[in-house]
Image 1 (spheres, rainbow, N blue to C red):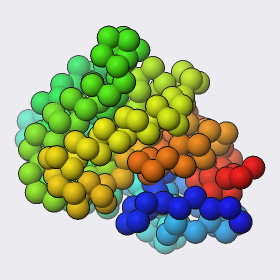
Image 2 (image 1 turned 135 degrees about the vertical axis):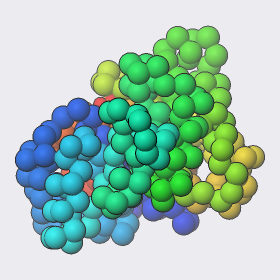
Image 3 (image 1 turned 90 degrees about the vertical axis):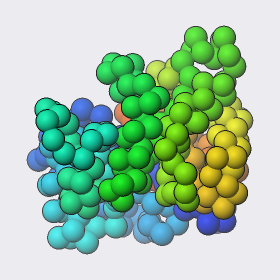
Length: 267
Ligand code: PGA
């Protein structure tokens, strides 16, 4: 069997960002079927970690199901407040997400940056909040088509990562997701070479700011029009350790196939 070897110490992570899709009843059905279908296919969850990111209102249901049935899936939220508690109507504290046994939280997704005006400073505060509450932040960075034309591929993602890490000083458990904005939901993914080029630059920033050890163990994901047909190409790249999957994470068979990318290699 052909295999893709992950980098030593970095377990590949396939993360499904559901965005504002699936209510809590649909979430229960989906997560149950996903776990069954991966188990049926003999998926080794220790070789490729699988996580889902449902809307806030689904999290309690997903937690209850995963914990009751001991499903080998991780889950997290799509955003977190920079504050721990208080008069912040509509916001969700990292303390609440931690109490729901979330492992991860997505921070600084381009839709939050574009549609909700999130700045690098706010992203940095949210990253700090996640770490305060023992959540692993999945820090999203990526350039728009305009940025790409004006500054090349890595300038904006590198600057965003530096900004996001403003309050991270010690060895921290984080994940970075490189998501070119032009590739999100467009059907036009970056090439594996493009993803690798930026991922390598992002890892260099991690070395500089957090040291070699943290940089070596930090997973860098690619996101933007990932599907079963293109995942294996990204996973062959040495600095790409997984994927943040949007649209294709809502299609059970497609998502399961992405998770099982090691089976596609050599096809
Ligand atoms: P997409 O979204 O896979 O639908 O392009 C990725 C994302 O927004 O995280």
